[in-house]
Image 1 (tube, protein in one colour):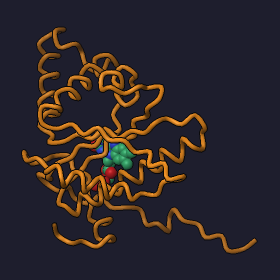
Image 2 (image 1 turned 135 degrees about the vertical axis):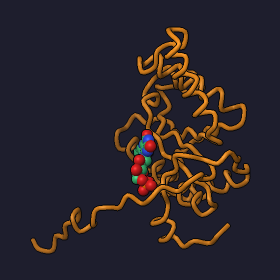
Image 3 (image 1 turned 180 degrees about the horizontal axis):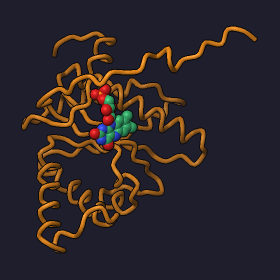
Image 4 (image 1 turned 180 degrees about the vertical axis):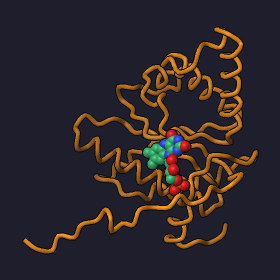
Length: 197
Ligand SMILES: Cc1cc2nc3c(=O)[nH]c(=O)nc-3n(C[C@H](O)[C@H](O)[C@H](O)COP(=O)(O)O)c2cc1C
């Protein structure tokens, strides 16, 4: 592990869309999410939950994703025609090649303030994990795909839409290539100091 300081990690981390064909060891994945769990958490609820798909386990997730895209009308049924079959196969191949997928979710809260706190805390958990991963040379892509809002998808992966809320589906692995920095707007453009009554 190369030591990087916090500020450098924050600046140099990139979202990684392509991965090497190499698994990240389980103890490293556990360390990454352990660092994630140092996130701030109101009432010490630690609301984050993780389903980590890898190896043959990924198939279960990928079939649920494909079923959801079909069910949402975003992908034709594979037996509809050869083009649909080709598209389904190519999506399946692409998703199966990603070394690890993490579905990050939390138990839904009925009170709006508690819900926001839990959601916010899980987001900080994810960003902590992304930064820790970067330090281990591991890349992540935070995704917010349409199936995250599909009740049937929740059921297919053993969650309950009524009581669980998915925050992100993370793609994880060693980066094949690190994308260029896209830049950021100077913060002065977005920041107002209020100094007088
Ligand atoms: C809540 C959230 C959802 C995102 N969803 C996607 C996504 O679905 N697909 C994707 O390619 N990137 C997604 N991203 C990653 C952004 O595209 C990425 O952070 C942005 O392009 C800036 O790149 P950087 O992270 O390398 O600085 C998401 C990021 C966040 C915070």
